[in-house]
Length: 314
Image 1 (cartoon, helix red, strand yellow):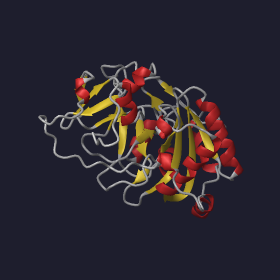
Image 2 (cartoon, helix red, strand yellow; image 1 turned 90 degrees about the vertical axis):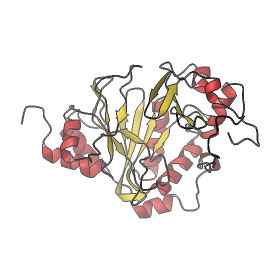
Image 3 (cartoon, rainbow, N blue to C red; image 1 turned 180 degrees about the vertical axis):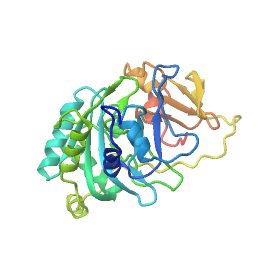
Image 4 (cartoon, rainbow, N blue to C red; image 1 turned 90 degrees about the horizontal axis):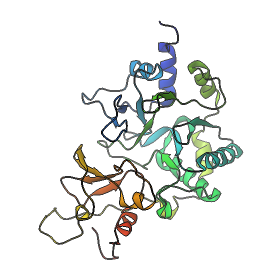
């Protein structure tokens, strides 16, 4: 083994800490046409292995990991991502309050902010984890992206209460990997900046148990403003039907993975999305569009001067 390389044994320890399902993503080594290093699922359908984790820790690749396993609807960890102004202050506030509950959360640096990680003794129901964190954020007045129309705020992984078997949910960059765009490894505070020291630190953290979680959320439910909205069943797409067409208001700058990608009008109104690729619009059905920075459909329509009427479903 070359000097500085991570041993297989350390990759196995990382696997036990963070891998809850074998689907994963890989960050591209080369930037896309907008300068971003996108994540993609391996095209050959390969599953995450300890060897891939070792390559991640050695800086050869950078993986994204999924919190929620659709077979169990449970997660081995909770990650709170924050990358806005004063994000670190909010994460420290959450970390302090979690500690008061007896929950040890590990703070990891990131490119634009930080991530706060909570490890579980055994995988916990994603819904319970989300109820706990969202109520905690509400109590501390920590902003949540998408809540109350906010474009900035924390993001909680797992991002969903549950998934269908064929769904993946949202991945987050695996800790201790090298960000391909920044060419930098981001470490956890509280331990020396060496892989083994970081793993030792993470393994010493007290992990949240299921009885503790049930105690924390007793009598609580997901706050109304953060509950997933019921999916609207749209009739088959008919290009001749008169209805709101987002492509009449925004240009399709490029096409990738079945979507058009362009600048989000809501982000632009806030002076964001400089790369101009936060908004994805389905090629097959342009009525389906999503801002990957968290802007809601209402925010996007309002920014275009075409607010959604109460009776409209488009």
